[in-house]
Image 1 (cartoon, rainbow, N blue to C red):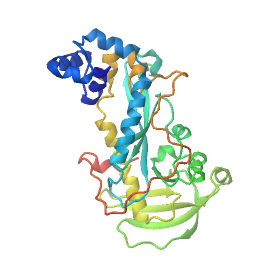
Image 2 (cartoon, rainbow, N blue to C red; image 1 turned 135 degrees about the vertical axis):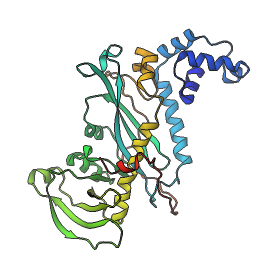
Image 3 (tube, one colour; image 1 turned 60 degrees about the vertical axis):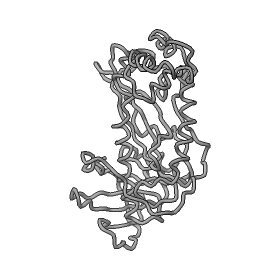
Image 4 (cartoon, rainbow, N blue to C red; image 1 turned 90 degrees about the horizontal axis):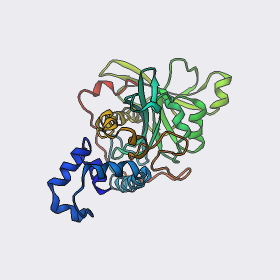
Length: 328
């Protein structure tokens, strides 16, 4: 059990790799609670029999402590409230090994939906779903945190679901779709900020849309000078500067970088652990109705954490990813 847990933190590639690492430091096994030699078969049995909830509970403890450590970690904006980036990534699986994960006719996959705390880039919610599940439906599983910001791409634009965030006193920042019809009510005084073209108060133009979201919205039009693109953001926050709204959306790219660096949850992992991964890998869990694979669910409408008000530095991104930050 301890060997498996250690392996998850040190990015081992398989059971044989774990066995070799444990053998390399026999004098330290005692302090880990291991009484003797740990063969590969013992690890395989533990991986198959131990309930994944053990790892999920342990992950919740680690995440809770990590969020405390990174409570005041800046992500590019001077923001006292909590801010989260929501997105998903598809994990390809071998259909012959995982027939329950059918994604296409000859392809298997699951989808990992992740809510990332931008203060420290710590995942606070992970949900593994069928690969075909639409991203927007994961909003039904979230418990909004009052006063927090949820930054999402256009795939999460569903005004009935977004209105639930407003009703919970939470804020969202997203990009509007081309087919969304909006009616301008007033124009706010444009700030003397680079890139902000307009800042308007709007409502949904069609009666059917207003049934789902009857409240006002804020539309910020922004010019990305680096890529010469015009972007339109929607938010239900009317207090922050327009430039901050645009930069909040740009910070959403941190969840994409998180997916890129999450090397321990790869198709290679799935092939090494075979069928047992569907039931016992931490943060993964089973896809059947008896298991709800999730972590760090917060109390309903929990109060947002207050943060110290200090100057923040700009979020860092890789050179290869810089040009894609506004793409979604």
